[in-house]
Length: 210
Image (cartoon, rainbow, N blue to C red):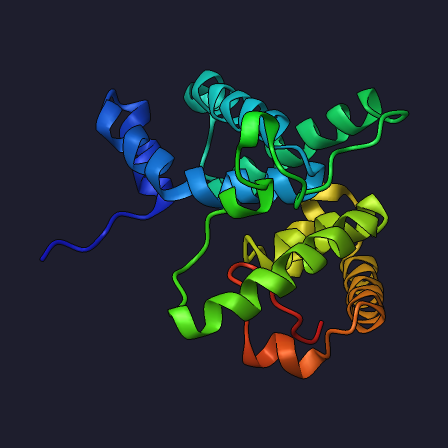
């Protein structure tokens, strides 16, 4: 079996005129990108719009991309900057709760967050904990929320997060610690113990140590 190509190899192939290489990148990052945007903004429609805009900017900038940074870092830098712009526009507007029912009886936005599968016996606990975590995430200051989501959801190393947002690595780690402390307090106030999160993990969200 041929070894799966890296993100950077796929982008290089796309630069050389291979459209299927970009389709592979799209399939690989569609779900994590949407999840990142949804958890940052708390609005499904805006997350979908910004996910599309992020990939459009990748397409437009692909010809100028050079292998000086990981594709993942480039992708989430674009997405993060779009979130910052969107948040500025929405500064005086309150985002809908992730666990609020959608329009015309649509399922809660939290149910549209992609994640790894869990067995039925654990589904009820995850369904209970996940909205509380989402609400707690949205209550964090934006600079803490983005660090937590980039690290826990996207798996971006602290060093690369620091490069993305223009601060030093120690500042990133400090924001991560504050985010973890705030999330633990918020969950405890909602009656959810850290042991419950560990035993019944919610897909895509962890409360590991910084």
